[in-house]
Image (cartoon, rainbow, N blue to C red; front, side, top):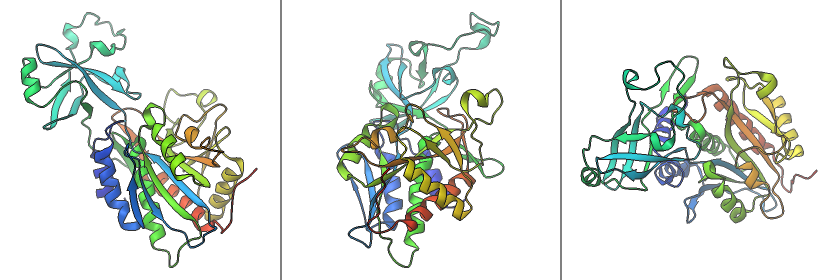
Length: 356
């Protein structure tokens, strides 16, 4: 794997929605070495710029989101247990029996989401329903509220699963927060490859790691308005549907290891998508296709409507087990995405714009 140390550090650094700054620091430190400058705004959107060689070259925004799903402390009981509220689309059905990293005022605190032994639960027939959020509690080893406070924990602190990245067979990576830290990694890899060019490309390229996608794409809305690019490529993960129990007739077919997926319809500009397909064909890069009949469910929906409209396209990385602590990606798809984007940028011409 190319630059495993950086990717593993990025994946291991907690960056839940609203608390993205630790991960942004890691990302900015890396991409800063391959860009002309790195900047950030009031809410933590962070972007790096490579200036183009032509004043009439297009301004291209490469956008990914920096945040991950997680939890916040909602209540601390008198006997020292913590109750949670989800941040983003956290799945309550898989929470019990997991270890957590809680970000307190005095540093990280380890806790466990309790799981009452099966012998003691009321329903032992195997027909249990998923718990409600108010039934989920965290044990940090405290016996009273004051001990929790002494650890530096209070209502409003963030938490994420304690799950470190590991490599499996066949170039596959398993980790928490691959959604969407993998796209931030792709942006850094793209800039690394562009830095190797003997001269500058006509286009000015802005790589953006945006905040708060998991709660509605707030960061993408802010940064699209501020940077006002001529064209945008948005990067996120998509569901790999090649696992047991899923019907392609209902969910489509996207395969892990089948290459990046291009989405058609709605926010995705048809001329831009066609250009990406042409570049992929010329470079021998395998791609996949998805349909978007109403919305993409990604930052693309926020980017393309900014100001008078920004021609945009969504490039997605196939991912298994999304919004869980065991997300799974094929690094071959990641490197294919890097190749596609670098080739697309090198293909852009001075004065080029995308119109239907």
